[in-house]
Picture (cartoon, rainbow, N blue to C red):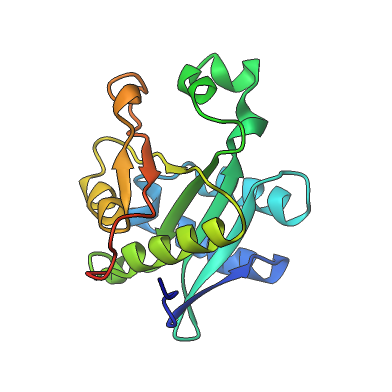
Length: 179
């Protein structure tokens, strides 16, 4: 399956932090992400190599349109995380989790997030990752629709056991030609 030629991913640098700060303050991101100051601190730690999560800017036709990151489940399979999220122990340690959001709320519901997520999942598969998850809030219907369109499906044995999160796994066999 060919990658989406209009979308690419650039590693976040310190120069991107003001743009990300602005995005994090937007109402559509504040609804699902944490406090902007705290979130930008997490991203800064990633850029500075103090966190193993890998952050990227989603580029579409040469313009930054969103943020995407992947994190390693195995790095979170410890008591600090599993006390509140025991489902983490039910996934292979080599699993990666993905989080994303578009920066401009006016770009929501145009298929951009689905296209970006599908392209990012294919990139991760090409890099050797086999199990890719995403964990939207169960109340975030827009995100769940986008992630389903990108090829993610709920993990049946975890349904109803993960609090507010719906754990979805990428299925590379799903035809994404409608994206």
